[in-house]
Length: 230
Image 1 (cartoon, rainbow, N blue to C red):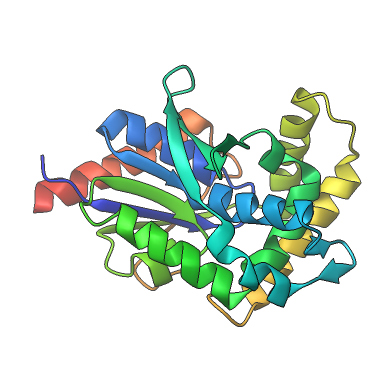
Image 2: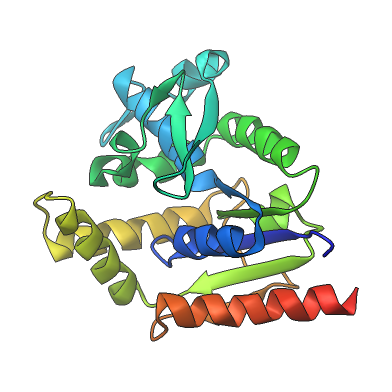
């Protein structure tokens, strides 16, 4: 079966990564979580005091970009690659609400986006890849054969994120998570460099009332339809 490039974009907490992982496993494709890449750079910026809730030293971070090495290491127990920053597994560290609250600030920096987009495009040269993020179908892979745009209400997404954080034993309020979701939505859609927009040829899926299994079947049918048409 001919391999294609699948680009999945959408707002935070729409289940993009979950769907992308499932698709990659079903199809035998490579999965790339671009959000994890931006989160890793954000965590690095936090550790070096380039970013906080009240501070952003963009120039300082830009001057250190050549000190940042990112790669994924496949974990067979999990079934997907974990994010490594400069040789250190930071998968747990980058999933905190603190990182979530700052990642959109860092993602606004054009030099950061340029560095990561270059790496992402290199990863997808051989096709057979599923990549999720904010600008995959519009910037990273504008020629992707299949583009999916995920959506769901802010309240639904906040509840999902809240349940996920609580399951990790972290104490947080739903209102705090909802506020973070709304703030990220605003930044992601209003930044000057590669804002979150639906690609003209993307297929939108609102999964507010879909289970993970249901949305996977919907997209697998789209993949099969496209491949059969080749």
